[in-house]
Amino acid sequence: MMKTDFNNLKTLVVMQLKDKTDLSYLKSSRKTLFVAAGKIGQFVLSGAAFFLFLYLASLLKLFSFTGIVPTTIMTAAYTLFFVLSVVGCTAGLTEALYLSADNRVLLTLPVRPDTVFFSKLILYYIFELKKNLLLLLPMYVSYGIVMGAVWYYYLWLLVCFVFVSFVPVAIGALLSIPSLFIAQFVRKYKWLQATIIVASTVLIGWLLVGIIKIIPEDINIAGQWTAISVAVQQALQDFANMVRPLDMVNLMMVGGTSQIRSSLITINALWGWLIVLGTSAVCLALAYLAAKPLFFRMASKQFEYEKDVTGFKKNKVHSRKFAPVVYETMRSFRSSRFVIRQMAGLVVLPVAVFLMNKLYVAMNTRLAGQYMTIAFSLLISLLIVTAGNVNYASVLSADGAARPIAKTQPLEPYTTIFARLIVRTVVIVLSAIAAMILWQSVAKLSVADTTLLAAVIIFTGLAHLLWSVEMDVMNPQNEQYATVGVSFDNPNERNSTIIGFLISALVAFCMYFIMSEGQTKAIFKIALVALVFLGARVYLLLTRIRLYYAEK
Image 1 (tube, rainbow, N blue to C red):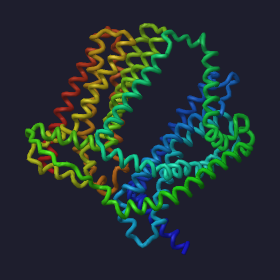
Image 2: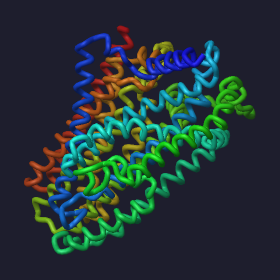
Image 3: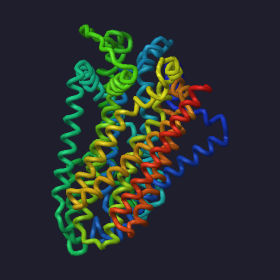
Image 4: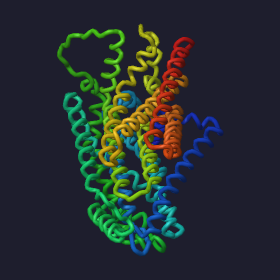
């Protein structure tokens, strides 16, 4: 009986794993090597970046006067990843356990409901383990290299990560119960959903700006380095004391500041193992007792939660040009993820620009340094904007099998496509204007320079947005979305990311190198080139749309 249940569980996990991930590259040894090289490169780059950070911190004696990097810095890093993992697992398991459409199919298979329930948890555990091995493990490897860890430290990390990765999944399974009821309640009231998102965005932005304003106007790093180092060390120690259980788990993996070079098996390691195994066991048991019955009820009677009775509303007739805009805007705002992503875009850019220039102004820089700060601020601004455009490289393909229906609409094809870009365009414009207003208030730029910088960001961001959409037009991935889902590695999004980085770097470098001609004159030239670039992307996208809809 147990062998049959295990085989059924294994089969269910493999089925869902194939459905949620694109494993087609395994059919080709060349593609497999390419994907493996990409993962290894990601591991090495993230590890190298963190190693450089730790090495410089040790060299500058930021975290201790002896140059040793204490374990508290790893506690802070692990806590951040742990909180994000718990939030991600809670949201994901709420959707996967109670609201996913494939539950109806899985429960019709000749398996026990318990098997389906545990297959969902194992699937999320695999995803969590994969994420930790690619993102968190390189940080611990870098820490071991900097600290001169004992040889078996790296093997010990692999053993620890196998168990540590399950803790967020177990906690997420338990928290998915209240998360479901909160989500169901909020979904019934759209006004409440909008109020929460807007209020949260405004509150976060207001808090971040308030914190940044605390930064003193004159920062003398060399003269205040001792005080800064002491404050950082004390803050890290206080934080480690606040999250003592997570600090013990971190000590389980690294042993300690001095023990990492000799022996990892300490009393702290034993406490860490008790916390990991105990938390996992308790949360899993509670989730099994409470979440499993709810999972079975929601999966078998899901139709009761799918349709709400709404009052009759008179249909409004719009013009042929305006109707697609209304439809696509309403359709976009039905997605909470889309709304949160765009609201985050409104906050991240202004806050990042405000923080950078607040720090720059507090430092006494020469003229070349001022030019460099403008170029670097522009680089970061464009990176943020282009990163927000990446999802639009799949804006049409995300419709899956329904994408060809767009050709049957009695409208010009470019009308419906451009209608989908209205919200993102507004976000880019508003965030750029807000960022430049904050920049001008801190750096005391002229109104002309501020306006031209906003134009550079807007024109370049919109040009990259149109380029991303053009990739989706010419290289559609709707078949992949129809079969695999949203979790596969879309080449268009990957290319959009690379192009966005290259464009941002090119614009920033050009800005810096021609700044010697005069600040306003240089910004005007870059803005003019960005406008021409935007015009070229508009023309090319329209040409590609006509070509695609005429020939395919």
